[in-house]
Length: 178
Image 1 (cartoon, rainbow, N blue to C red):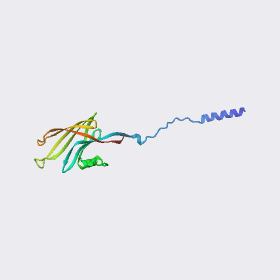
Image 2 (cartoon, rainbow, N blue to C red):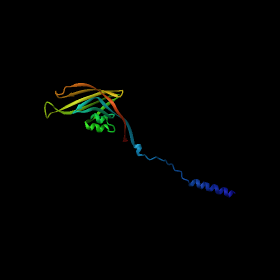
Image 3 (tube, rainbow, N blue to C red):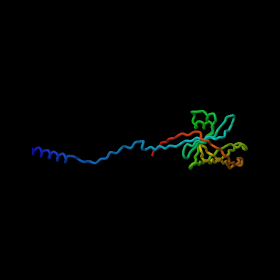
Image 4 (cartoon, helix red, strand yellow):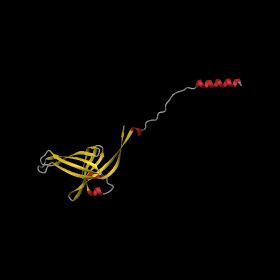
């Protein structure tokens, strides 16, 4: 019995000295999802209450706010705007459209539109017309104050007011890498 006890202690001591104690840490591998950031933005499309008839085709002007500092100013036909299933980007290409930078703070929005038009008085001469749009979002509408100016005396400076009504809202999710 003493021999068995001594033999067990000897084996225990040998096993104790034979074990190595290492310190290690398990680290989770970085996934590609952790390196991308998702931004959510509410894209809003506003249409003017006024309509414009050119060659018996009815057009409406619109603003599509596509980001915190960008928008699309467009003129599209009323029949295409009324049809379902067609996106506003395609509608904008039917008439005319401009990708513009804008400034937004709280419920206010401001942007400039510069257009080159041919002169009616002097053929072959182009005019640069600048329109400044400034408005406030109130109850699903934007009341815009539009100032028109030009360096030419052919264009009379004018100040207009126009109301743009909310037409459509959709979420835009963008993903970018860190």
